[in-house]
Length: 389
Length: 72
Image (cartoon, rainbow over all chains, first blue to last red):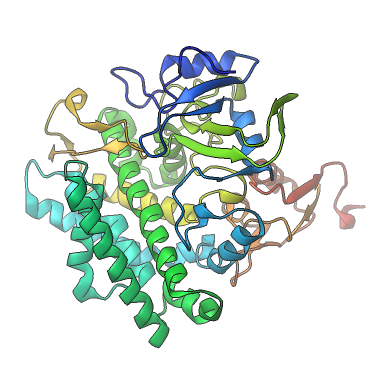
């Protein structure tokens, strides 16, 4: 049974791109889970159970019976293409590279990458676009470290990843870019096969290369790129735009190092770049005594769940980088919870204070309400963020 | 408070080691949880509760009413 009115499940409120559409708050108040039609450019329209409450999202995402199913196009080596024991086996090959300790060890490299991006912003001068010179290069260069991309190749690599994120390019250009990246990744895997580098991809080849095909290894490389690049670039752009509109909170991030970790959690909660998580039930699932039946599709709204007023005694609709750390589902929950989240946190913790310290008078070069927010893509962010200082 | 962890359930995302680093750590090779202190002192109780709630694998079990063995 489907509602006659479809909920724009990934929708954001008019004039306030950080907030969910009012329909999602309505759905959150309903005791009954709603079944609606979800428009999807990727998969075509489909009917799905919409889950919006914090506890409900957590409970379905942790359920063994909830699978990726056909929610994403299949790609060998991509964790989002696997479920159950196959997923665990592949994921185990990577988890050792993404521990809290590894993220701390990568800090000096991340600091180096951030410093070089800040130099580029300074060189670009007044009106510099932070998306182009700061938000995009940082995760790209960190990924280069993880994949072992040689320095000589990095400019090309950066160019290709920038094209992949540019929504103004044609489909042909995007397809050509994807093919070039696939070929490059295959070459990288071949080099690691010959002499495994001291980085994430090199370690997987060295320790598990006998169990994995070349296309699975290239798929792992591609997944690390896709998962670790657009998400972080988008979160950085959204977080910076948000803070530029809240100068008092920007000052906290700039001036109080002890507030950084909490501020990053609040920004992650508030920006929720991957606003929806599509899944499918492999068997019957119970949510508060309501049944989601086998084969039904499920869409969890991270954006709504992160602001679930029923789950906290705080006003979660406002940004407050000083508030006690609130739980959030920005990295998902359950077996598919973001593998690279400790690395993501570290990138944000290094990059944000460094930007505001280097440019203490940073302000937007255009009115903030004229910014081009990417509200209709899978990952929310800002397309261009020109600044002066 | 007494803590038990189920290594076989752990998804190795490291939230526990992030939130309560005096109590939880991760194995270097695959990130699986390791318990540093099964009966942590009072000041660790709040972080441990937060880590338990945020474990995506429900791999941490808390026994709130069991006191530290050496306190008895």
